[in-house]
Image (cartoon, rainbow, N blue to C red; front, side, top):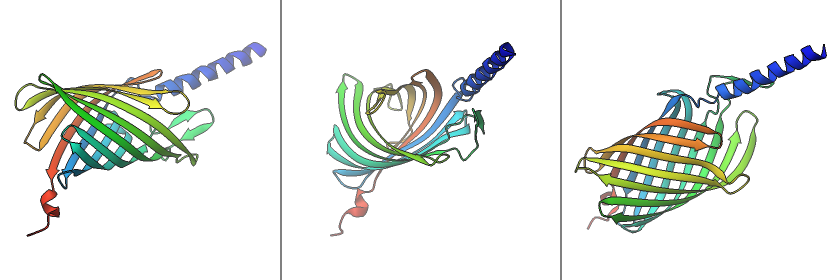
Length: 241
């Protein structure tokens, strides 16, 4: 009888672990659809606008909505300081519901996050290569909508980006970004990205790329489609003579 109980316990434990592994979506090729805008309002100031829709699978199985905005102060052509806010809604379950232990998580198992961030960007050019260094601090106010537990987290990020023009229309873009937690385990994640870019107009461009998103013990592959649209609204704020 003891042997039977031991075997049953082992089977239950194995099924529990497998359920957790199968629910991550790590083996699926997901997608991120993104919009970024820099909206100039004066010689020194602009407004950042951003929206991202992220999926566990190709354009299906919702993972995350990210909305972000901020005020940019252009110190000069190669240095920008930003203070911003973001709202993030995340579905942490790969399937419509996952059974983990004794808890059943349905579609309302979402995580809501309000985020404040401070950012500094430096740009430089080496031959034809355009480099951008982005330093960001984040204060994250996170709530698990299933358990109603809230937490405040702090994080630092650094991204180095390189852009190589191929023609007046086409360009290549690469970046690597590391996330450092300022509490508990230091390593958060690392994102490596490569893309082909197209300058549609002087103010509009698109990028079609691949992202490898690495966490401790997990790696995710994502197709990225990004739209970058910059506008000059400074004329609306100038006083009429």
